[in-house]
Amino acid sequence: MKDIEIARSAKLEKITDIAKKVGIDEENLELYGKYKAKISSNVYENLKDKKDGKLILVTAINPTPLGEGKTTISIGLADGLSKINKNAILALREPSLGPVFGIKGGATGGGCVQVAPMEDINLHFTGDIHAITSANNLLSAMIDNHIFQGNELGFDKVIWKRCVDLNDRALRKVEIALSGEKNAVPREDGFDITVASEIMAIFCLANDINDLKQRIGNIVVGYTKEGKEIKAKDLKAEGAMTVLLKDAIQPNLVQTLENTPAIIHGGPFANIAHGCNSIIATKLAMKLADYTITEAGFGADLGAEKFLNIKCRALPKPPDAVVCVATIKALKYHGGADIDTIKEENIHALEKGIHNLEKHIENLKDKFGLNVIVAINKYITDSDNEINYLEVKLNDLGIKMSLCEAWEKGGEGATDLAQKVVELTENPSEFNYIYNIEDSIEEKINKVAKNIYGAESVEFLDESKEKIINLEKKGYGNLPICIAKTQYSLSDDAKNLLCDNSFKIHVRDVILKSGAGFIVVLTGNIFTMPGLPKKPAAEEIDVAEDGNIVGIF
Image (cartoon, rainbow, N blue to C red):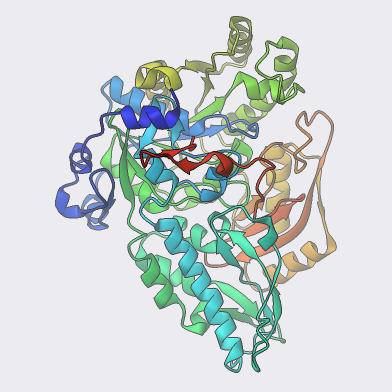
């Protein structure tokens, strides 16, 4: 049975009943039909003095192009905790339409562990990402209108891009204002995918609507001839942009197929943004339940690194435990097995590929000082020989492993993981940041590249070095960094899967995100607007004769 069919066959509870499980009454909900709701900010205010529950971060090894099932494991773990009578809640990201219509598909889990209503969440949901797109593009419109109307602020260079929540490589670089009108000033522009936009980052890092407005006002959108910054607040744009985000800023409540509460809010990519759901949602979840399960996008070198070095600086505490998800298929892929043959038994490739898992464990356990467990997302193609080999290897490393069968069995298939995670959270961690906020920008980049990726050195292009010097002169040297890098490798080369020889990280550009409060570092050939694959998932998505959506997975 396909994921979408499993989701439709599940017996969902009314969202008001799901809310009651975590102590939220209907008065503090804005209903979006029977199974979706937004949670009023009053809920957190009433609970802000309550002790936080345990926080569990789910991350992974470097994935194959189809992903490794972090969301599936996250949902399975939440349902598994419920099965062993623990009070659990999920705090996840909203899916982007880019992957839904691209190669990866949806981001609501799979098999018997999904969040629902699946089609709604994967598509327009409650309109949050559309609101973010509109706020972003309102600012673009106000910039170009200001220039058209006489350019009183003296724009010489505009650095703000438009955005759309689709994979569309043709929009990476565009020419605008070509109407020929008298005051129109043609210039080069470009689009980011919405989930890589600064508005999305601000949305996910703001503490409340007032913080959101202030951060939006602080966005640097351009420069004068003299190099003076022009900000969104100079255009008087922050008020209207905040109005567009007024409803979106409230977290969304849904449920798993087994009726475990789930908050889904915000959705930045982890390879080109910071890859975590909103601060508002995570903080609220920790007040509502004893165990909050959240995830960070792609491998631990991307999402988890940014969760720990960026998001944790704004959270009350670091994770009490980290689940590192791996699949035997991906381990073989990183051991040199071809993507078309990774379902076949191959102990040699597994042996070579396990270095990827070892590096992520080392980073999480030894570098960050966190409690770590490995969850193997089991596939029917995994052989007993491969599973046994992996278990012995992890045993030798002193790392607990749980074979997770949640995709097939639901929460029941994750009770072993749930029990082990509960035990793990009782151990105190010795959390460390990889860099100090006072380090120079170059030092921060070097520390992440060498400690987390395992790079020999970092090579800075001349233009990026100049930008770093200018940013530090302007007083932005004490911001955290958000490195944009391929998700498929520890290096910045998507084809270097083995990483068995020394490699460099190549920094080609740095971009200030003053509203979000971090500096984006572009490496390799990463783009902030992805493209569609040769055969996009969109080709299989349709509305059937009975009115149901087909093709979303």
